[in-house]
Length: 403
Image 1 (cartoon, rainbow, N blue to C red):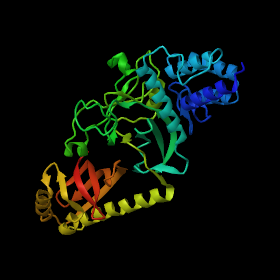
Image 2 (spheres, rainbow, N blue to C red):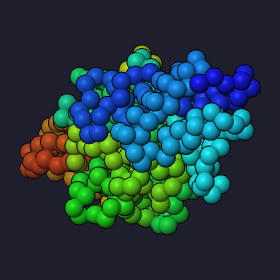
Image 3 (tube, rainbow, N blue to C red):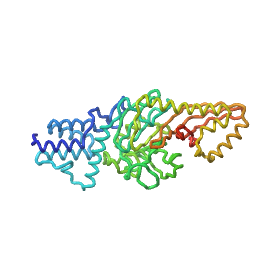
Image 4 (tube, rainbow, N blue to C red):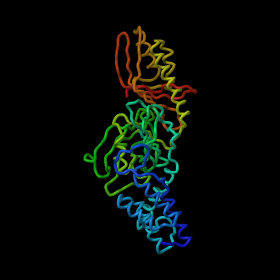
């Protein structure tokens, strides 16, 4: 099939807008990924783009037809197919010439095309690490990082403490964007969360597709800042849908069913962190190590000062605006001084220590660990969570409680 120069240029520009993807192997529905890979139809679409660029429009159409056999509900692919068919007989005036849908739905597909382009154009490099994944214990095998600006979900593997990129997926977020603050605001929360359970399709309506992973929104920091709401999940899509527009949920993070099934192979209920950011910050390996080591030194200093029975030195690690379940810093200090008076020795062990930086302008890190506390008159093991925050340039604990 041959086109005049203008028609070919317009078609290429429209297809480029919709389909700029890296040419890598696609992962099948729900399969376990080996090494670095992609899920979904992106590889085929990248080949379609190459065919269009080389004016091999018959080949592009054949690939699109095959793609739709695999993903029959992929509306964006249907739109590309329509443009390719129309290009046989008429000049193209823009992206989506054959769409019979209302302009709003066509606009949703244009938005999806655009964020897919941007997401793939800015995929993380091998030497880039999300700033938020400061430390994962051995038991924490994977981490999830969501970038709402790019409508991407990144899956990372814990390789002896270093996060290694595994795969990324297109996602849908809240209708009104990110930074959830209240019930019903149709926004996706931003912060450090973890998966609390898995809800299989049999317990849900078709709206949630292949299942759902609830997360612990609102977390301790959300509650302290007056944020409310509930029911924030990672979940799938209805059976007649491949993907939803970039902003279409009531606050949840939504994936294609095939992608959710793939992700399910790596999620550990109660362990896997889900960090949601409006714009992921990336660090070099050296910078990541430096940030990690600096906070580890502060945590170790806090641990040793508690063991020392020097209560004032121990309390120096707490921020002026500290809060806990038992009150503010003054009440915390009163309790700690009274308890220390009855101790002749303390030994404190920290196991399974994790550190995740909270997205946003404030320098906050969520620290969780198993605390093994031993003293002359009390032994206990408990799960603890702290929020460390920079105060006058120094790391201080601003919240502490049971995890």
